[in-house]
Length: 354
Image (cartoon, rainbow, N blue to C red; front, side, top):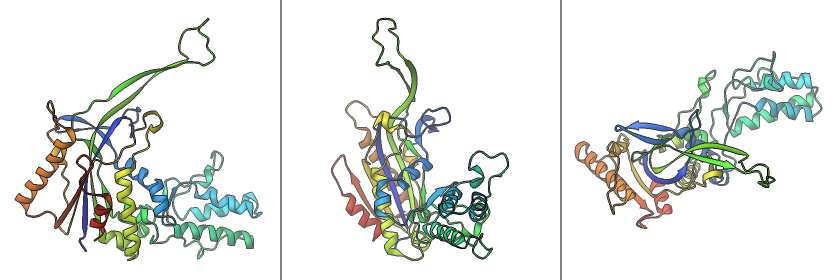
């Protein structure tokens, strides 16, 4: 089995604001002395992990990333007839094994049941937490130190196996991500534009007030994005306890999500859903490398030229030149191109799994 699979993806998004910065404007990056639109890897992974594709294909193998597991435990205990005082104390003992607890002094409602940072609970850990809550409720006594050994090395959570997790207070139960995801950037120079808009009150008949009920501005941008992904197939299977069948299911769901699922930012305002236009997959044991350097010089089509065609050519040229300088950087390659109708997603998935 080839260890690495690398994906080079081109996706064109119409006017949108898929991933905002702290001011509400689309995220950007300066590359090759040109400003590009950018979509962070965190934004993309969140969209894939919570997509219908993952939920359907990997049911029972998705973790839960939350600070509020203590509230869930508390509710189970209360429903079983445990007093609020005991339920709160036992819930804090249980979830405190997954992260530092928030102070119970001057806390807002139920904040004392939260942990400070998000923790990614595997399905095995969620099951163990819920079972312990039921045990405590049945005997009306808190958990023992032995029962509080709830942390597990995740083996059933495909999303944790793919994207990893970090527990600062319990590093023995960390997991190294098997999939590395770059920030997507436009292959061309891009501008963030502002959309001035107004809203009209439906009950305003225009007789006494002809003005708008609200005016505002929203920022957006459009472009063709390049995304690089590196998948360590051996690590993925190892993270899943050697279950290659689950590893193949995870890889299949992941590629479907990468090619079809868009970040959710302001989708209701822009409907900026898009499928990938081009994907180049490479596999082998060679040291992985991105092809982002193909776009250090921004793509700039002239009259009659096609942006996607030029971007594909830039990727293929950079790939060929890397092979000339360093030797073959992959053992095999497969590409799909929605512009020319070449290749198929099913074949691409089979290629990555073989």
